[in-house]
Amino acid sequence: MNTIRKAGVVSVLVLAASAVMAGPGHGSNPVGEPGNAAQAVRTVEVDMTDNMRFTPGEISVRQGETVRLLVKNSGAVKHELVLGTPEELRAHYAMMLKMPGMEHADDNMVSVAPGATGEVVWRFTKAGNVHFACLQPGHYDAGMKGLVKVAQTAGASKSDGHGAHKH
Picture 1 (cartoon, rainbow, N blue to C red):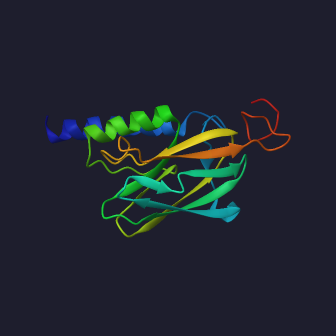
Picture 2 (cartoon, helix red, strand yellow):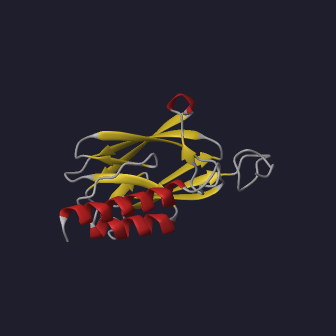
């Protein structure tokens, strides 16, 4: 496959993945939305290691809460934290296996070099479970996954962080 055609295929896949991760329209993303760092109510430190685990592996937040995830890579290889639904994470991981050198960046993720720290600021708009994983080749299959439990806020609709009104 020539270089130009290969670049075109990669661009289409990256755009498709971005569309899947972003979701259409206001408030429709099941995992939430990018947060404003100035509105973060707290910081949660997450450590990533070469034993293919996140510490903590489970985080509890409240619906509507904006949280700064301070993500440290204590390992010797690159790791990342990507927020998504199980379906989104599996699809993104399959793409990463096909193109292991692919660089990608989105608001719902951070790639962190060994010994470095990065962050994701995220607003959890819907009650329920939000998954996260490392999608570097081999890491997801090795169990490098975690869960954010989003508790429903009193008076809020389960499906929308803006109360009970409909869009």
